[in-house]
Image 1 (tube, rainbow over the protein chains, first blue to last red):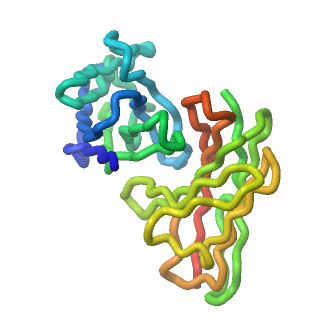
Image 2 (spheres, chains in turn cyan, yellow):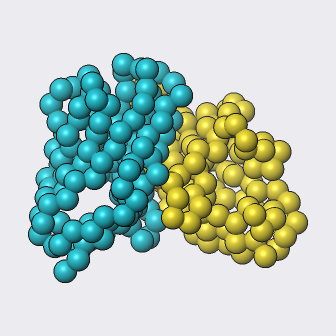
Length: 115
Length: 116
C-alpha cells in the first residue's frame, strides 16, 4: 500500500513571495503518477500539477513547479509570486497506474497568503 | 476540463432516514467513479470505487450496507447513506475518470451532509 506524507500542516507566505510545500511518499511501484491538488474554501478540488514518475523533467504550470526526486520519493510544490487566491488547502496525491487508478492523498497543507 | 456535477451541495436529514447523493459526468463517459469522505480539516479518504455496470469495491472499514453505491450508467453514480446517524455527518466528494488509460480525475463540488 502507498502512503503519502505532508509534514507541514500549515504554512504562510507573503504575497508575491515564493513558498515550497513538501510531500514524501512510499511505494514499491515503479509506474505511478503524482499530483498536487488545491482545495479552496469552496471545497472544490482543483488539479494544480501532475508528474509522471518515468519523466525525469520536473513538471511546470505557470507559477507552479515541482521538484521530483524519485530516489528520495519526494515531490515538493513550489509556488512563485504567491497570490491571495492561492490561499487554500493543498493535497499531494499518488496514483498507481496499475492498481485501479485510485488516488491516495496526503494529509494536506493549509497555505495562507498574506497581503 | 471535464465537468462533474454533484448534487445536492448540502443536505440536512433526520437520524434514521436515508440520503442519496448523485454524481454526474456532464461531458464525458465516466467508466470509473470514486467516492471520498472528508472530515473537517482532514484529507480525503477513499470510501469506494465503482465501475459502470459492476458492484462497487469498498475500502476496508467502510460498511457497504450502509453506504450503497450504484453506477448504473456511464454518466451517473449515486451514494446512498442508509439509516443515517450523526456520526455520518461529513463532506462527501465524488470523482470520475473517463477510462483506464486516463490519469486525471475530475471532482464534483462535494456534498455536506448533516444528520440531526
